Length: 482
Image (cartoon, rainbow, N blue to C red; front, side, top):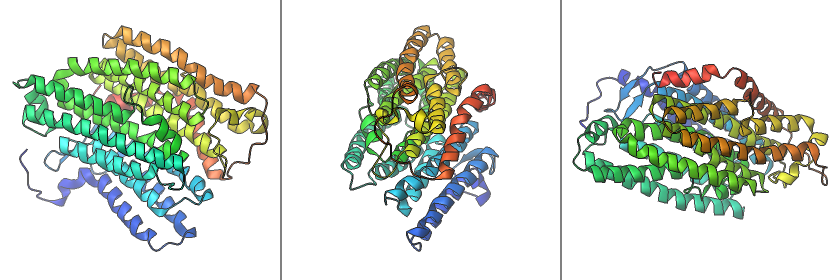
């Protein structure tokens, strides 16, 4: 890659949202040094505002699209869709952070800053034009996530989750880096566009395919796809619930961007190889995720294993191949991020100090005690189960159609079978809330009206957007030039 000198600051305009985010993050880090414990809510509120501003800048095209940093950073329609979405979802996740952590005396000003830098890493991932930028963005996201998971140092579960996340995350990064190095060795370039050109005529095809296999394994680790999902249930269970909400939603969008850049942009000519790998991972994720979720009594672990099954559906879109497949997978990731935020947000809203509300039995008879919350959770569970006309139904339908159009009818049939199986454990939660008798006295949840309002908007959006999902799908399709 030949370095092109920067002639003027105007050439960096496509990077403007990222520059605003990093500048704001450093400013808030300095501001936090001068705030007392009571005043630290200011850091939190300003962080949410910053993310919303960045999301708006990307959505409205501030700075324009283009390629900067000698092709290492690419801002296009795909990065705009994913960047605006992950910034907005991260802001939504931060709404649930403050009341939960404050109630337990765990809130630290650096938590918001760590989340901002994690978002920056995600934005670099979805805009990467080089193998170097992919790895920089991935490690920025990973290092911030490790610290956030283990933020409650007095909690053995959180410490264990942090260690497992770090060790297995390092293994995943190593697999991915080895795959990237093999691809570089086979093609002689770090630029993704140049890799695609070299892949059509390279003499080192065995090395290149081996590198692709390691890249797919690294992607599967980061997604939490089976059989590389072993970190996910323990991390989701052990981390503070708002942190679980964050790492279980926005990063999925970032990994979708990374997958597109690596597989479609860089090694698209080898589609016949990586499509089969993704199809196998999709089947394993659907089977292991759904069957394991059925056996869970802990709500967070059930949602963790259900995440594995949802990754199976998402990979089904990728396996379908082409612009339609990637558009369907992106749509599915957007929908899943909204559903995961609402599901874990409900646990946060139901919890209080000394009561985590993370067991399914904790929700017995909830309708008799709090009909509003029971109704919101019902909306979320129906969407996750794919009940029409909820948004989750259209997401599943889009990836199933992509698989069929990609000549993978057998994969679509597997998806339909496990969609029916997966509905069981979601509807079990509804049955517990509406048909079981309450057990004992449930502690009063943390009173925080803005959080409950945001949760209500999020949950009802799954129904309303299910009735008007076409604009979102059209946005995703437009990003891929369809």
